[in-house]
Figure: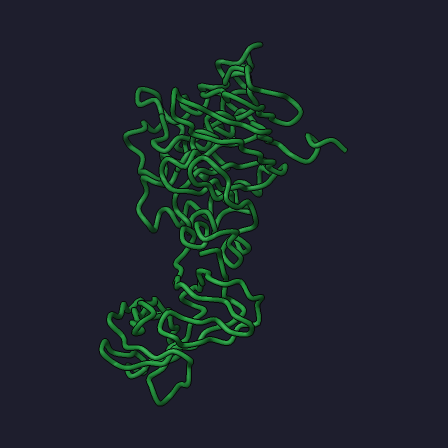
Length: 356
């Protein structure tokens, strides 16, 4: 079985330069057929450049881009089996919904019969739950409806790969959540590969089958969302994806020695100076006297979030930690007040150590 039978997209040692600036450096990436993959990273990390090289809007300076078994480096965008949904949708304001969706079909050669275009447009609008909206003008639609029109226009050509360039960025929070679920359902129904570019960690983790974390033009980790969150490949991933507490420690036989001289039991190997990373939800907090955690500090701030509370806790000689605590009842006394002394415990299996 060839690689093209398993993957819809491949980057083979791809580098992209703009003059003296290198946007992407030696990228190797294989996107499985039918997967929902998120390219996640901060602004300027190279994720949109990768998307544009797949779409044909940019060409690699070195290396090869494959869609299926076809090397597409020199293939123009209109001949690639992909479609793209842009952040601001790029809809034609002078055309109604039906004609926006039909636009790409009408450009195909040989020409498609009018009744076939109408049938495919109707099916695409039904798939995005916009049946009956064909004669609406674009300015008459909400942001979420416009986003669905852009999706219908992208899927009506039956692409092998759908590229999504931060398509939810312009929507409010509730509508974004609704559209995240709709995109997941749409991808399952279509069975085609979705490649999403986003800087939103929650969006990447909640929607995708695989997350590709990028920084400074390189891939830092490519794995399932749970693995990226629970077992970050390096300190950048641990820090960028979700919230992470960090402290400098020295890994000695059986213990971790902290900056204030305190020690924590640790079953890992002796490594010398290291940076410990620990998620806020892997730490536990209790009032002094009701808990016996190995660290003691005091609460400096509290953020009430309904089902849980986030505490900022200062530990002398070590630093400040963010700790998430779930509420298990309606008793207001469950909430610890700023200024109270607390003990801190943690889930030892959740500790991750990285080179100092």
